[in-house]
Image (cartoon, rainbow, N blue to C red; front, side, top):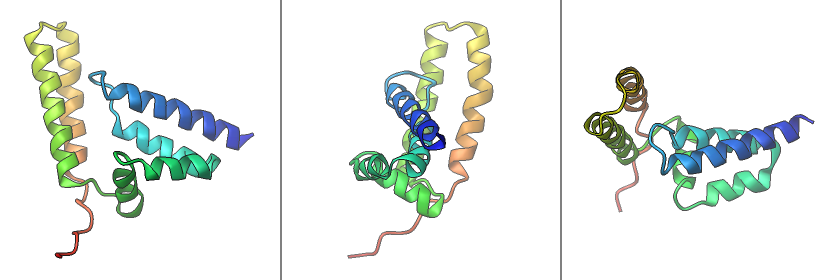
Length: 124
């Protein structure tokens, strides 16, 4: 029964992560990481499939092994959050939305920027 619950949470998280690729303020990476965690407990096949994904696989592996986020991923995350905030401000989003973003986005950026970068690649 718990295996089924982990699988349902993993599938829901993956769906939210995929939606987060195109929806502002819906984060992709945390949902994909949660999906990987749930799949590791429910479906080795789905976990392996996610790790083999060209886009998400290296990010998940880096997080699982080192609790780290690559510098490029950090930069993209911070820039995309800044862009979402700027666009929200420019299009005249409601004040409460701007305030929520002004509180949540810097906290999220702080968390991301304080994670380790991960192992250095060997110089070839």
